[in-house]
Length: 419
Image (cartoon, rainbow, N blue to C red; front, side, top):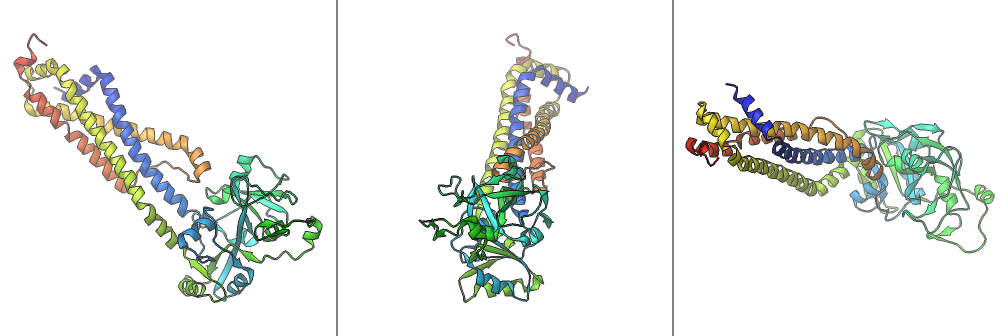
């Protein structure tokens, strides 16, 4: 006699209860997989934002703060680096290239990045992929701007449009540089990094914007015309941060010490990878807490599954009594209930994985546009596979509990007229 077939037939006879139990188990698995995937994709998105740069150099602050405001556009700089100090460090023989960056302005909530051609030549993300201009060209004039992919798509900008930069980095700018609009000349290829949320203008453009400003406040009186501004020497007096690449990785630590001991002004040089490790250590507690909550949900789902199976045993007493009458032994009854609970585990796992995949695909566009995290789909990592195998084993073994209870129900009670 095919006991597996009988177990499945029994489940089909109780299909409403079985479907609800499967839904409970599937949602538990989906939550566990989704939390792990979001955790992994968050790390990957942060790690892929910058590659190929050996050091970040900015005004002295915390290394994590320097990384966040210079690369991820989170927070603000505590101070600037003088242009003279930048030029002095840039001329060091161990430096292969640098990328100067000036921050402090924005446009409708998106950061404005003052930089130069070295940004296009040397900035890399992911696996050392260079940024590329998808439409138009890189800026070549003081009042030209190149947009990140998200800025262009979300604000519906095209080549040739004019934009006005606001003072400060808030989503709402109370002071705008409306007398000096910038012309859109290029749109970058999507990167899945904060580059997509940035507007790139020349360093001279940053200087030109603030000709009539002093200490962050616009001076009163007659404004300098655009023509007079363009006739000025627009070399910046300071920048916010710069990225650099060394001629040899062996010289990174010695140059880092040189910058940290720089006598002209207090500076800080950090290795991006080391600063990222600080970030992971900082959020590790939250990550582990989320994973623990997900595992508790899985355990709750398994307990609920066993509870449902036990609760339905009273309705199945005649069915179990017939099995006994047909010669089913104790081991057979245990096996039948273990097959049932194992079925819930296997099908719940498959359905949960499908739900998880669909949810990741549907949420990807929203999460990437609002949080800069690209959600991916794929097989679970090794540690998660072990957790899922443990889940399947536990789900199957838990069938012993209702199986033992079913065995304890007597044959005479199962065939009594009261049933």
